[in-house]
Length: 94
Image: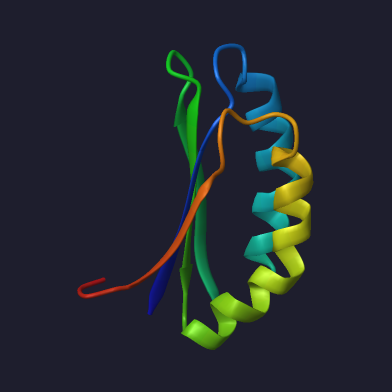
């Protein structure tokens, strides 16, 4: 299993943008092959938000990135304070 972690900062007042992003991406990701779970969370006071997705395999995670990546970038473009961090980790213990 693998976890994709996306971290980004909208800054103060970013809650509405985060909610719009979550409403679009969470159901889309959740319906993809190999997705076990998807969670969108954040700290409104700091304007920092994260998206985590648990995948069956690295192949499923990579296939999803080709579909979701452009949508993700569309939400982030012009809205974030600096580039997002997008990482993929192997799960050691589920």
